[in-house]
Length: 183
Length: 241
Image 1 (cartoon, rainbow over the protein chains, first blue to last red):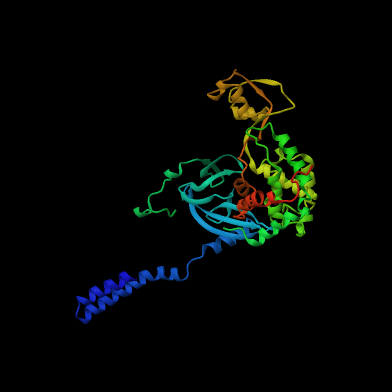
Image 2: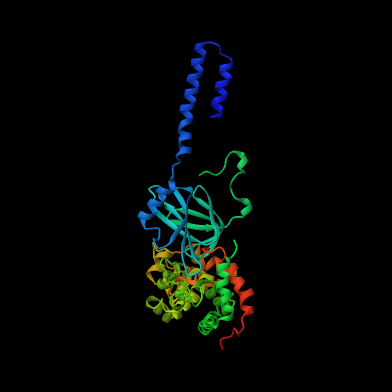
């Protein structure tokens, strides 16, 4: 929006005729038209968590006796040319004095059906790169060794293997390079 | 996060209230039994029964709470994954608990004695490290021999003869590279299964992560508080016998 106003002001300063004013107004209107969908999105953000929540409830992936305390869409894996959304689900089981945590990374198909569930405790899912999901901390699959901080998926998300990578060598550029992780 | 004063007041009330020790004997006996049974497993370090007692104090709310005479360790609360794991014998739990407990917890989980035993077994399960390995049939120690035929591969041979790829490869190193008709392979009946290959270091932080599942961010601090600030002030012996 600021860019639009600046362009309009600059052109108005160099135009004295009615024709020139009209041209400026057309340019301004055009730019507004281009930017308005983005502004609308900010005003009414697409809440994909509601869509994911609905899908998880429908598939029975969520336990109705637990408290859902966190649900987020982490990233999208690219497996065999298809996208697989990764969601982070944190639930609590209330107790007499303390709750137990049930934390899961759930991989969904592009139709939002769960294909893979990985339990974790105090770790966190971080980001996707191609078919790999990087996590903070070490995770096991099915409570069986090995454990590692990189989960590599294949077979439409149904197969997963674990690797370990030095945390100082994560395959992502610095944010300032203009290529942040948005997969 | 800080532990709430309300929770501290609750556990502090146990300092002068011997009812909080009601399950000491059971806990100590169960922990001693499991310590003895699991001693031969790699890297095993004995668990101190006071850790379980501190978990009981942390979770139960004490003898005035309704759960004290039921699911005192909260195993089997609606939505509890621990109960499902133990009931179904998942995540290696059958290598920890005995068959009597596995039967009892299916129908008697609301009994505090069974609830405590289930919780102890679940803690050991969560602290153990498991791998899937080839397990020789304990009832059949015979070494069999098979002559390779044209078109065979190791996976098919293993499947057809009740053994595993790992067993065939370990007894016949040359077969790891290739097999050829007429080659004789030794094998023992075996199947793939979970085995305990090690143990996590027993700390309150590890228990908070692996047992509590990160549900209560103060769980480890609460255990520390009870072990370091509450138990030393008890006006009675901590030994049950």
